[in-house]
Image 1 (cartoon, rainbow, N blue to C red):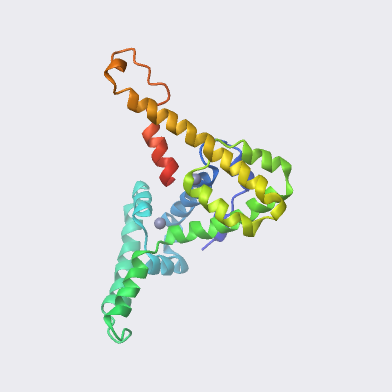
Image 2: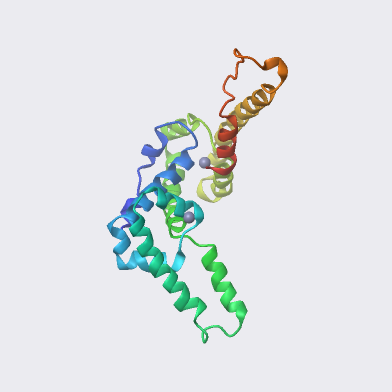
Length: 227
Ligand SMILES: [Zn+2]
Ligand SMILES: [Zn+2]
């Protein structure tokens, strides 16, 4: 696989300033990866070997189906199903007991080619991200100017930070991340509360002011799930 498709300049991800930048990072890697395998790369032997082994999760099957190239998917599925049959289901000698077989199926049930590539790409981009935070005040400013961090990526950043940046930079990093999260959380609490209050009879009628609350449920789901 051409790994260069998973190389994105960090500045490109942080300049837009809408939504969570790490959701944007994930989305960019995901789009590139899905487009790549739905195109000519699908026929590349090393890519096919990996898709046969790893399969796809539901989210990424859905992304692939949006591409409208159903033959590409069918060809990948054909060899993936054959692989499941020949290397797990019909294989008798390899497994001394049924536990070995279920372990193998469980591994397959929890793997996805696109997820594994995103994880690979994110890991590399995060190394650069933490390096830039450590070195550049301009980049610190760019991070602090982001609209928000989602809960998932906030957890990811805080659990990685102590091993990725110096003790000196750590408290500033945590403060910036926490402030981005808190600001957004406060907005969501406000908007969801406003939404609930709109169902009060006193707020009914044509001139009811929904404020920013109309899409507050969708925004909260995104905050909590990244999607
Ligand atoms: Zn996020
Ligand atoms: Zn996936």
